[in-house]
Structures are given as structure tokens and as C-alpha cells.
Image (cartoon, rainbow, N blue to C red; front, side, top):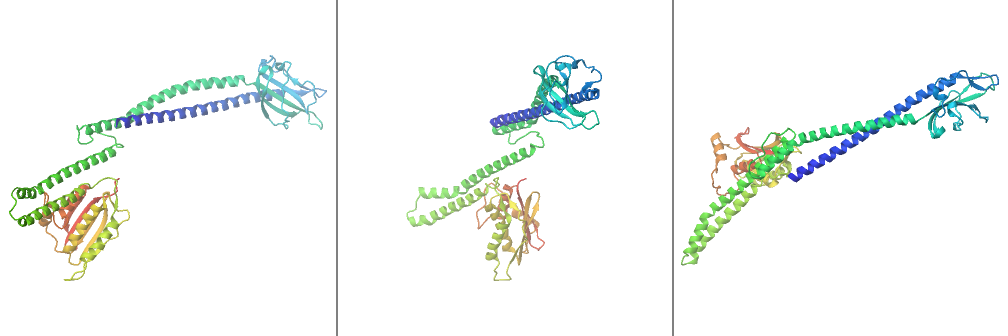
Length: 461
């Protein structure tokens, strides 16, 4: 139990750490991506405003050459390699030096070969001056609405270093935040595991108390999720205790039953008669008595193992087989009409939580008893009840009074076992049913005779 507890605790810890790590990694990756996307959009919006500003200032002189009406106010346009650049080229390219900002100094932006349509906005990321990486927006415009008027390619670019620095700062702060959040979540998970596993630790202590003999059952207050397990375990303990007690009782009864035959055999061995022929009948009688007692108690001992978990016996096939046997044995009658044995349709899901031999012994004994006393009819039906099944056997015989029914069920309730007869009696059926936590009830039948109702456990919930 302790090894199981340790293994379960480590498995839960590893599962919690894995889930926490995956969650934080996914959260960090997603948030960093969202921030980069947002910062890039902001960067492009600012760059597009600069492009609109340059486009608004563009005009052509008398020689149809481009120029800016007024100077641009941002000092970065005039500072070499300041990180903000503009450049104007003719479309199509005609060679020569393009019109460009002072910040480009003596370099030219290497624009890609694509040619944007008029008013169309293109985006590029390409190498810039002084080893910079720039993000570039460009568009084509035509200033004169005349055939053959030149078109101009206006490009504005900005260094992406600030964008990358902002993303790096955010990622660093995000990493710190996620580390703190991870530590907090880990502490919360630790507390949750400690609280959540507390009932299992309590269950471990209860099992140890049972194993060490300090408690006969699992005791304590457990949450509703664990209580069904505790109840099932206590039922197993109760069953084992019942089986052990039954085994001790059977052994004691067997020893008591063969004591007298053994005493007679011992006396015969100590004082043998003169004629061995006088010894043989007594010896055979006592040996047969011992054999009957041994066979009887072995049969009862097998019934003491009833209720073992994991066994399910369908009721329908067993009852059909018993009825076929009973019809052959009891239906033909010389002194009256044939006996009718009726079985109501049995639910296909009806199963007895036990061995088929025990079901055959209990149901067979009830059917045999009903057939012996019935006048013309025996009726058998199976109905569900409280997670189990109720087997009802009715006959139209003379029946029993309330006093007689009580006496039949109470017969044999003493320290010694009953002398074996031709089969199990009603009290034996009751004892086997009790081993399965079932019940046998005798009452008046609507047919006029005796009704025997046997309640048996079904499929465990």
C-alpha cells in the first residue's frame, strides 16, 4: 500500500508538472506571438503614415522631375543612418540617382523587382544602410493626369531594431511573469494534491489498521468519491470474515459429527469380538456414517465459498434447465392430472452474482419442494429489486401456516449441523442466500399454497 501510494503520488506530480509546463509554454508562445503581431501592425501603421506624408509632399517641376514641396520635419529624415528613410524612383526605372532622403547618405535602397500598380501597397523586409534590416512600404503614383505622364515609385523604410528590441523586452518580462506564475501555480498544485490526496492517505492508514489487526473494518469519514471504494472493501472484509467463520464452524461440526463413530471404532479396536463376523456390520455402519458426514460437510463447505467476486451467472438458462429436469421428474403423476410448471419470461440482463452451482442448489431445492406439494401447478418468475433479482416460486398445494413457516426456517439453528437427508432443506437455502447477502422469505401464495421468495444480488454497481 505504501509503495502504491508513493507511485501514485509521483505519477500525479509528474502529470501535474507536465500539464503545467505545456500550459505555460503554450501561453508564453501565444502571448509572444500576439505581442509581435500587434507591435508589427503598429510599426506598419506608423510607417504608412510616413509614406502618406511623403506622397502628399511629392510634386514635379517644369522638367517633370520629382521633388518635395517642403522639407519633412522629422529629424531622422536628415540624420545619416537614423533609421527612417524615403526614396523615389521613376517607373519604369531609367537609371541615374533616385530622389532619396538625406538619412540614406550615399546609399540606395535595393528595391525588389516587383512593380506595384497605382495605389497598391507593397511590403518588404530587406537589408538597409549601415547593416540595418529595414521594413519597407511602397506604392506607385502618377501625378499628371496626361497621357505619357511619368509614374513614380515611392518607398518608405524604417529600421526594425526598435521593433525587435520591444519584442525582446516583452518576451523577457513575459518570461519573468510566467516563471512567477509557474511557481504560484506549482504551489497551488502542491496544495491541491496535498488536499486531494489526503483521503487516500487516510485510506492508507485505515488499511494498515485492518492489516495490523487494530480495526476489523475500514473506519473514518471519507469524501463521496472514495466512500464507495471503502464500502466495497468493507463488504469484501465482511465476506472473508463470514467465510472464515463458516469454515471454522464446518470443521467443528464435522469433528463433532464423527466423534461418536470414531469412539465406537476405537472401542471395537480395543475389544474385538471373538467372531469377526459380529464386527463387520458395526464397522461398516460406522464407516458409512463417517463417509456420509464427510460428504455432507464437504458439500456445505463448498457453499461457504459463495459470494466470491467476479462471477456472474445468467438466471434464464439455469432456470430453463431446472424446469426441464423438474418436468421429467414431477410432471407425470399416476394419481392425478399432470403437473404444470410455468416460467414467466426472464430478462436477458438478469444475472446472479455468484456460482451457477449455488444458484442451481437454491432454485432447484425450491422448485423440488414446490413440485412435491403442488396439486396441479407451479409458477416461477424473476423480477428486479434494489440492484438484484427476486426469484418467486408459487404452488397450489396445501401451504403452511405462519407458525409452520417460521418453524421450517428456524429448524436446525444450533451449534451442531443437521443430519443429512436427501437434499438441502429450506433452511439450507436460506443460509446459502445469506452468504450472498440475500434472503429467503416464505408466505402464502396467491395460488393457495406456499410462496417462496428468494432475493439474490445482481451485477455489482
